[in-house]
Image (cartoon, rainbow, N blue to C red; front, side, top):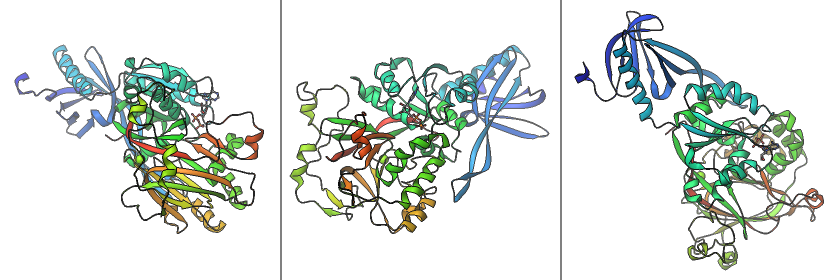
Length: 497
Ligand code: ADP
Ligand code: MG
């Protein structure tokens, strides 16, 4: 019989499955089939199995089976999304030789998948409704144990702790870094990795997110297109399966100051809602809807300019800029400068090796109600501001709302959950390669500025609360802030290859 077998196949053979006699086989594509007169069943080791355990003549297949259910996504869209349930199948072998053969073939197939074996896991106990610790113990740990993954677990003790940890972590020990948190911790990890001396290899470590926060935009953006419900078990399984996708990183610059963004930059209405509603954190995600209503009723507009290098197909937006030389003070250091210790103070990543000189910049002038600059489609589980955004297209999706009546804004808010708000004639949607914001004061309030938030972090604040606050922001409100995309710089665990 051995002669007929190919590398990973086991031909049809009589065994017992969950106590019942059945003829079973393992195909080269990793499909386990078994059946008797009652019919045939099959299981894909790649997409339905966490791991295996062999004890004597018994092999336990730890399955994670797909169940489709009528998922309700947001206010308008309802669609069928995949859920998964745990189930064990016990294969009982007739003798030791069969047990060894089956066990080896099943193990060989699982090993050929290249799944992660060692993970560094960062749990933020402060995320969302502060239940990440419990969620990890009850829902995530049992799945990782079934998949036989060794985990090093650390809880964050304060803001920026995840960034500090990843800046000095021995990355050779791990096949990935997984954040049990909201988006904030993931962004800290990206910034930690890119601020290392070995940033070029460090940023290639696959990153995972398991949703335990208020804002879970990244994981929703990953799971939703794959037809998976945005849930802790599905996100955990995506990490276990170990498929990877590259992810654009945008460098956000103001002079010498920089920040690395993988999600978004917001200004105007959305930033005000996101940040000012922080005091209602206890409500969970409804805080955004309730505070947005309030803000639309007392609508603010901001003066300012945006400049951008349009992606192909978006050259007709805005007006061409004549004085390109104005940008020279804000371009990235040249390749030569990057290597020089005298011109670049910090080690770590200094931005993509592209010059912005000579590119065709265009401009849009305010007043503005709202601005999004998005790298991924979802900004939170129920908000999809950038339905056309792609993980590694080398572009940022820019969404601008200027003059817009309150009634239209309210209508748009109701269509944020399925992205159809972008069809409104008040929405300007474009893709850019580089972007620059010159934020101005609030219309009618020459002393008040707005909030600029990148990936959940306030990077500049020009309102009165900032003037009185002890908190120092990374950048100043007023001078230009520029973003340039480095295509596919980071790697993220994804449910789809
Ligand atoms: P959420 O989506 O609920 O905002 P995040 O995981 O994005 O959750 O985290 C929010 C913030 O919590 C991050 O800025 C992070 O630095 C901070 N943080 C991490 N650990 C702690 C802690 N132990 N106490 C307070 N804040 C923390
Ligand atoms: Mg992109």
